[in-house]
Amino acid sequence: MYDMPIDKLLDKTGSIYKLVILASHRALELTDGAASKLVDADPDLKAPDIALKEILEGKITFKNKEAKETK
Image (cartoon, rainbow, N blue to C red):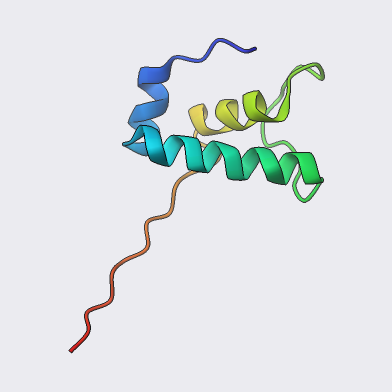
């Protein structure tokens, strides 16, 4: 497992819950082959570690949906 500074990862997402969701979605994309790696990574790294590295380097971000007002 790649050693990631959790405090810097939390600064990128603002919440541990958002971090977990973002990393898991990205890891699934990488595993399914739907996307290529956005960072240079050791071939032995697993998809979750690559996803966290992408988040840490700012290649992947969490997009907030704006709430629509209902009248």
